[in-house]
Image (cartoon, rainbow, N blue to C red; front, side):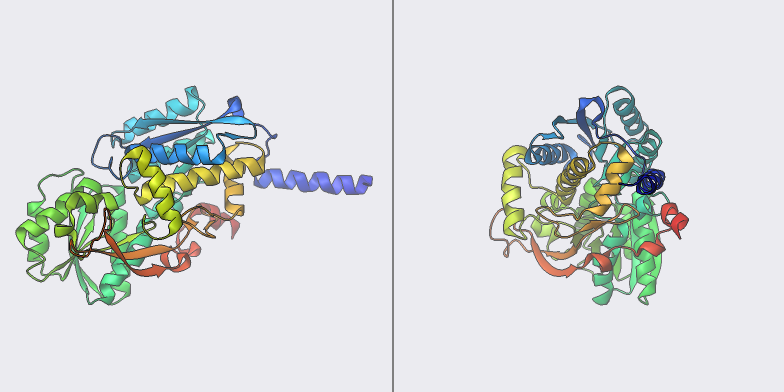
Length: 407
């Protein structure tokens, strides 16, 4: 190579380092350590919890247990659904225990806090069970990836389907925290964009056992759709109490805008039958999903949720990116995650977009009646597959500062 070519090569390498921080091919602390931060004991433990830990360990083992010759280690902790506890765990993991990536993180308010810490400390955040679309919008980060679903996709998939069925007036029962607010906002926007009306909303504290006063307000609104913008135990309680009050029998429709299969299991098909919901994953879709589920259940003794499947997929893709990049330096790894296609047992030819949003198909399901369910966990009937480019918010509409700087 001539001296001129060497000069051009050095210049090109320098420019690349300005765009993506350069790092030598190495693994910090000689271990790739991934921390699963989840709700292990509260109202989101069934949808996240130990299932997400099992999923991360399965991904590490399926990858071979090591990357670039270094051991992969999975650790876990319970954030108790409290942002201060979640933040403290994240800081301790990064500063004292050498954690390279944090995964799962249910509860959007905790995800926002951990996302900022991961950005400041240059660590990777793999979000699976938090939903706010702002995580790849105004709060997007060069070191985080939003893997499984978000509030926009839920609204675009399930909310829009309800509108198409004649649900043109809505009342929301909303969990009073970041996720609930975002889900109500994104769904209301789609309702209005399709000619519908929002007649009102009421917000309840997280983990509210008695929702009767909120449900009565929804009933009295005369809206033909009651949208549940909550999750986990709050969704279970809402649907059970709606049935107790006979609200659906009175003619109003109800939709759980975020309903996991663990929620349907907790409610029971007798009460959940007919419910319309959106999901990024269902265990009984393909031979691959059924085979993975069999392995997962042998370990966890529970049916996998889309959050659990998302932790597996995110962890596996993260490890692939480390292998291809030759380092576990956060920005370099996330940059590589955006370059290589997403392919695992439930996502085919997906991709991580520039804002960190994973683009994959979403599914519209209806819950079966007890009579139609033929075997354990035979809960869903597939109504529609929504392509990722239709399900998720267009890149230009998100307000991600990283994208704005490029344009």
